Image (cartoon, rainbow, N blue to C red; front, side, top):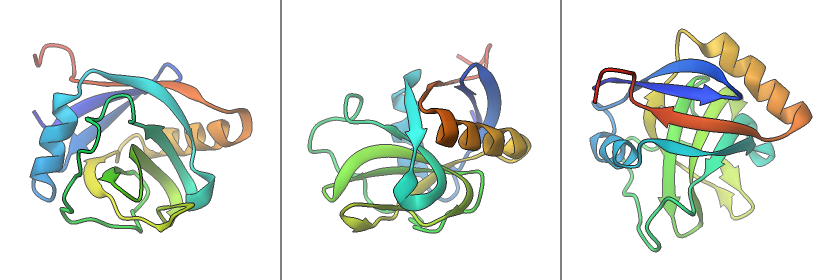
Length: 144
């Protein structure tokens, strides 16, 4: 499986798992599927939205760095779980520096949204202006 469907506010985006750069993190993400929650804007970090994973992530579980970055390209989705901040999925849609009130952070690049990047930009701006939206991540139909 290399693709996952992301639905934000009822709009569908296709993403590709980054098995080659973050295999352990991709495994952890796929074990959480289907994943649901409210995605909100990441004001600390610039043009990004994020999904808190506190209710889905095992308490005290840390994710080791795998090609970790704090400056993701637009369309990159990072998985983060460290003691410095709560676990999260972080979706960059523009100029971004991943951070929290604890300071700079780095997450593992688990997904990439390429073809649907313009739609992600539109959604990010809408979330910035109007607030949280429902998010769901799952395998494409017919893939198990």
